Length: 328
Ligand SMILES: [Zn+2]
Image 1: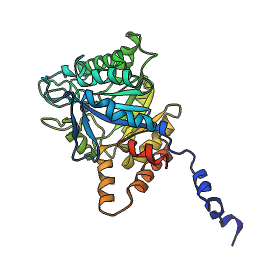
Image 2 (image 1 turned 135 degrees about the vertical axis):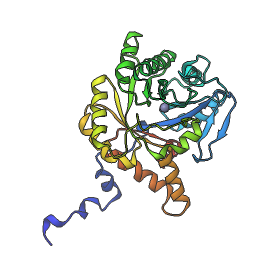
Image 3 (image 1 turned 120 degrees about the vertical axis):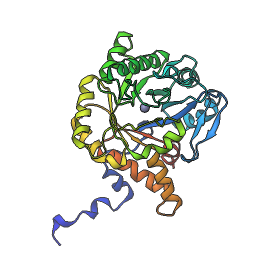
Image 4 (image 1 turned 30 degrees about the horizontal axis):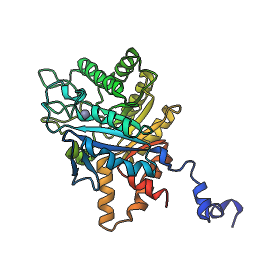
């Protein structure tokens, strides 16, 4: 056998196998998505998302304290308003007594070391369930949508969010939010993480169950990206870096590893996030329950693939498990 044919000498030992990855999952790379509802004592299981719950403000301490002890460093908050009056412009999104605004303050007070990101969108709060404001014909009215989304983002930042993360996919909202943060003198105090390449995926189903955010008519295909649209994703990533995003995100993650790799090439000087969405999480659980693979092994393989593609930050419902698994 020729000398150049032999590779196995480089990975015969477990430690040497670890050295073969350029980067490995660490606890600081994990951001945990959590659902906050407006029933203060709620702790309600979400059937389609194994192990995940909707939490009320009074339950956050008991829920988060053990995770912080295990090394949780970052969360992203999603509001689940069940009792509020929704309207066409998503007024409850930044109501000072709404679940996200209260949760930001509560978590900052309870766990000052935790980095708090907030998803910014209107769909959980509009009566029509779309992510922006609508014209009378039911299509998106872009400019007032951007203004309203920027207003919500600034109000989350004023309440103490370390990061605002617009998931709405309206054109121009990164520029609008960045300008709003600067004008509110928060430009140097709040990170802007853009869901830049967010695809119109069928893998958001369990999330919509959890957040109650399905549109009442139509779908989101006019603002979320078509799954096969590689070029459009590249343009969205370039646009958002030019408009002032501090972090670029790709969503979903595992079926879009090529887009993560594209983002790493197009925005090499930005942190790169990806969101292992609810459907991916549910799929990994379902496969493990069916005996297709071991849950832990598959969870690591999925996330290691994202890191290999270029991700430096992972939003995942497996965060509590990873905090345990990384210790053992
Ligand atoms: Zn939305």
